[in-house]
Image (cartoon, rainbow, N blue to C red):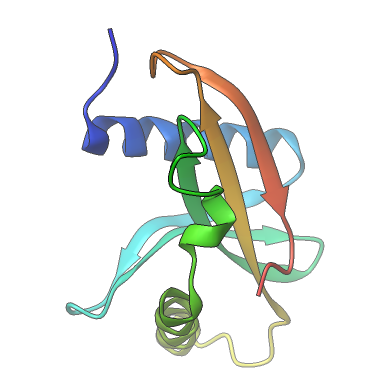
Length: 122
């Protein structure tokens, strides 16, 4: 049986974290929020970069690909949140990268078909 939207999103993020860790990322934070400005799904380090990673999942392509869901307005929010995160952590001279983890679920929402990481997505 499939999961509801919120549970599916959490499951997708958990699977993205496992994927990232298997691929050499060090996870620093998850679901970072500041006030009501927004949220960054995953904050990680890879090869000297601070990576701010948006996780987007899809069961099909009816609403476009996951990367298409990260529009310019969403990108601006993520950039602003990244700036706040770096300021709060006093990380001023870190090279920064914005990635998107596309999570493709099985059509019955019971598992993952594949995860596609897009580095430097925006």
